[in-house]
Image (cartoon, rainbow, N blue to C red; front, side, top):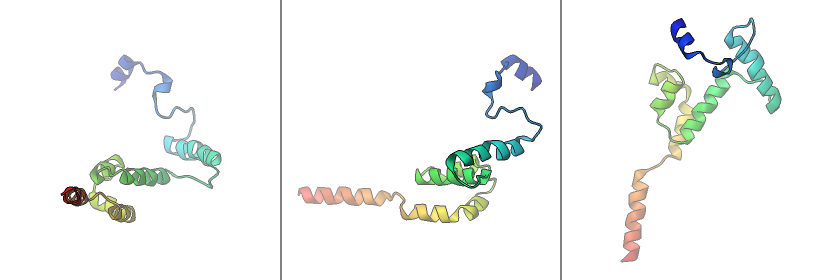
Length: 114
């Protein structure tokens, strides 16, 4: 890894989170990044799980496959993912795309033309 890092020679700004802190990256992210964002947004407090739930919600609303969302969030088991996001998934099913609607509408249009 060190040889590859030397070969690539990345700039300090090439990383997602650049920080000079004795804190661990998790502590830095929660204590500095998310706290600052919370203040800017005027909300009490943000946690990494809030971002995770927001990501899942946005993906589900865009009909992105559940297995893709599950893997993106790092869930090894689809069962655990579904258990946590069951309400979001069920709400999405109510508004989901039904391919039979398109066939029905096309048939109605053809019948109206006759």
